[in-house]
Length: 386
Image (cartoon, rainbow, N blue to C red; front, side, top):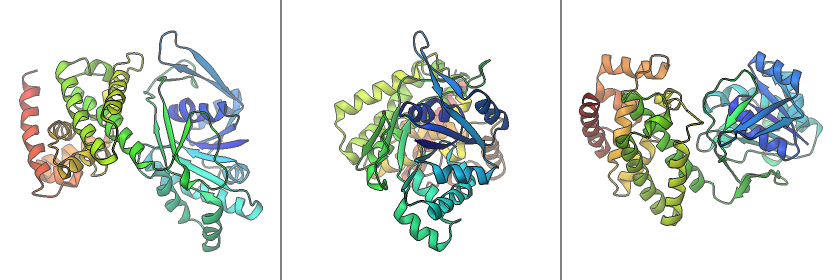
């Protein structure tokens, strides 16, 4: 069996690539990092290390790589593949769509076998979004055939893989915990059998549970930790006030998720405690600047902070701690992050109010606006006294 995976970075190798290998797939990575592609082709294997006592390792073998610029080779690999996956980041999906479309066209001309393309990204509806980009490069005839033969099932993925550097360029360290859920109603043909992949009938609860717990909690710690001068997530969460704010934010999102999706309160609280435990893992040592990067995207109306905050208001939940995190994100002025620099420039030129509405999509006069404004004042006092 052959799997083509776009993205040979740490998540691609340490999460999706490893599970595909364990399921018996030959994995062909597609990436634009020439050094990484060459290294994978030379060694045909790499190591995955768990961030836990003893650092147990496993070896992923029978792998190779293609450069993303070699569209003909990538297209041929997709034409021959049994499964296509991605872990490139939401903003990269439009850039890989043309190569995927070329592969689908070649496949449709030569094979009647169905193919599923699964975008394993930190976003809601990632595969469907990728499908829209891909269809923009297909002919009308191929779109008709693809609707029948090519599936784009949405997925929810969760595994913390921090920035890291090793003497071994291919070694990747990951946390032991992972979750990969796929909407089985969107699968075409037989469901790919991958140990660790869970098929569900309704993906929305899984996506929002992860986004509004893992990503929300991560963001709260990162943005408050940055304001307090902490370098890493595990160090920041040791601060009692940051820990209290994180628990407060997750209490708000928990109330929302229980109301909206009917999660069992006790079971969901166990999930929250597991997530909080993951954040304290010192072996991951994830930098607050990495977790906080791209604040404009993370402040958007559908994402991890503003998204649940707006929904909380709709359900009668006051999102004070989410408002605090939104205020802290607007203060994230890391000079090496282009989006952070842009936010600060907008604040200086147009003012805080304009920047709040422009970045978050919070409507003028919405009650969340006043919550964030109040929390911004509290944040200013908080950081001044610490």
